[in-house]
Length: 484
Ligand code: NFE
Ligand code: MG
Image (cartoon, rainbow, N blue to C red; front, side, top):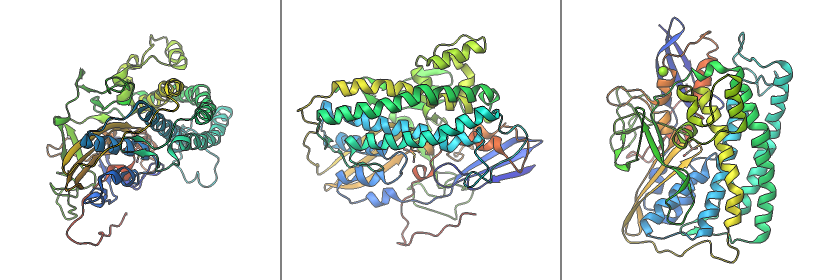
């Protein structure tokens, strides 16, 4: 048995350590460890509840809007306030921009370099090198690498678009309890359409065809990195003021069945986490190997993220998707037509690209529905006591915030975050987390250049800053922790 350690795994957010026990070039056992220490839930204690929206956005610079939305929804749930139509639409719009830009960043700047060979200069080297690692012919490779640079410009366009309604990004200023602090004006709608068109064209004409091109050349990755095939989505982008219909619906896919979601089925296991039942840190705990906890749903391991959302929603594929099936002499029009191949590295990449299209196609309609001159926020009062839940979908998957209020202050605040689901350690029954399962069974051709494992981990787009939440201990000092 040989042990491969990748620590930290680069081109993701935060510090993730992967350990794999390999026998005869096959992974027998894998461990995913979040080796970053945070304390957001402790920072929130005793604060003025509406401030949670701004504090929790600082959990992450990649998906701050999703945290703002989960937070504001849990506050409004506790306050008993309804958001007016303009507020609902503008929140969707801001969240959608952040969602799309995160996927583009992931495809081109994070995971893409596992498949595209960047120029052999810093910061692109050192990298894993080996025969057949980078399979694109030179011309295609150069063309897609050029898109790496265009994608940076699209990212900056997205930030500008988001700032029209969000004030700034990362960490938007306009999301407030009751709605949005921006008012709806014609000039903002016109500027939004202009910026949106450019992003939309990039997704449709550049990102999607490139995603399918890479999927075609690396087809073996439809069989690699298979997760538990159990999926969860909380749903996102409410389409009516009663919050009944969502662009991407809520659902659970468990052991081959589509099931309704039950919040009560969520529990966090800490058997292998460096914290105790009250989520206070405990670095001496036996058998612990991660700051991440292990969320489970009715004791089952669920994968969250774009793959879960696309499987649960089963949208019609883009023309590139339909053509992809035709080229392979297969029948396919919808996401589920990928069948078992969907639960893979390439399934995750395709899900992200297809999801961008579903979202960006809906956004112009949202702008049409805005009502100039109507309010975008309702007033609210902070109650003396209360509790609320806010569930949404961040780019990386199901995100939940929960609050308890006592004496008009936050008495308890908890976040259960997408990467906590996907990068979780084993639970008390010894059942591995999603990434651990996806790694197990994978082949590694060269123990010194384990690109196969990196591709599997990056297909989840992990974010460790989001994943690890640990409450304070008795001491006021932050414990020092060495990343080796
Ligand atoms: Ni820090 Fe996040 C997203 C959230 S991931 S990126 O998407 O919530 O766990
Ligand atoms: Mg496996």
